[in-house]
Image (tube, rainbow, N blue to C red; front, top):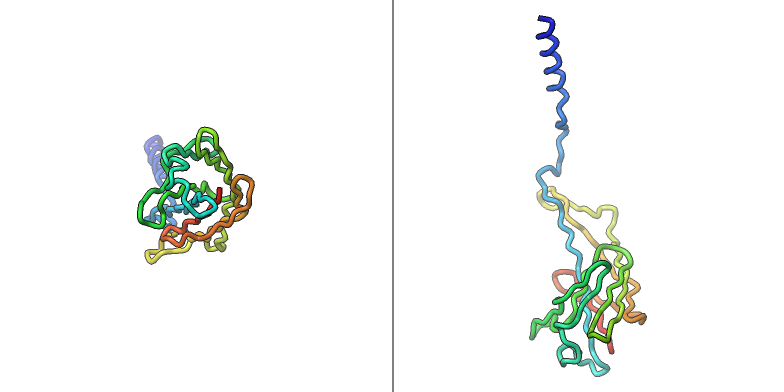
Length: 169
């Protein structure tokens, strides 16, 4: 009988020591907030303003981007008749200083470096109408250099918050 009482008390003890925390979690049913970073669009032009991809000086298919640890291809935007025709899309890889090597051909490779800064306030995760956290980024690009020459980065004014830089070659 003592053994049965002992076993019953052990079972009750372990049952009461559940791993589940009964404290309510306000964000329990919320998806993880997706933070999609904008891109930087590079427009390559000559001194007369002609796009060097559109006029065939550089082939869109031959252009590569070398990020630290991997190389990307097929990222030239080519939607004809729009304001995003023949531009090179550079992915922003998080925050902080970054360098991407732009390979225009077998013989031409040029570094593009910039600093991605998040100016979001302490309230970087705001809540949507359902009470779930959403990303609230205020991203700026600073210290942009293309081939060691300082560049002016402008807002692209699209729905994605992208930036654009025009490189005169």
